[in-house]
Image (cartoon, rainbow, N blue to C red; front, side, top):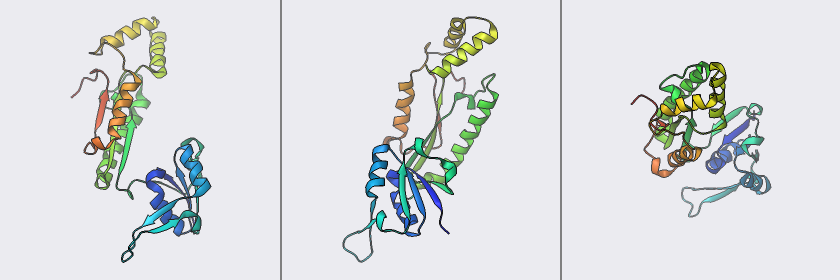
Length: 219
């Protein structure tokens, strides 16, 4: 029996994909558009070290019984696959970063459903970090506070409408609760994500880091 398998992370998933192709499975890898175009046009070549052989053995995906394709995240329908895997364990390296919310530490009024879901993600992340750390894969969470986005503006306007006051009043109240007296910028959030994704953060695992200007009232 053959399966349709989706591998997240083509850069580290080609070795695993080759093994699945050897068994005749249909494999699709998620990657950037230039990489997807290259794979769809030329396939992949993986070098296997062979005991007793002076040079590695090159195995081309086009020569194997299975079929290989690649696509961008926007072009993939996860429901069309029998199995979805991360191409990290095989490579013994990976970074999983979840953007959730400071509500996992201090609940936010009127966001019950949102807070519940984010709390579940935080628990899942911690358990996963314990399970995959041995493979040099880290799992961490970023907890945005009040970051200047369309979502924040929507919350301000919603609260203003509920309380029948101006948006400026709500914004001032929110700023008063932040020790730095300003909203965060998306670039400040991105800077932490870039660090956690880098080799410099290789021993940071299973933690949730707030980017909130000091607003969250917990240690």
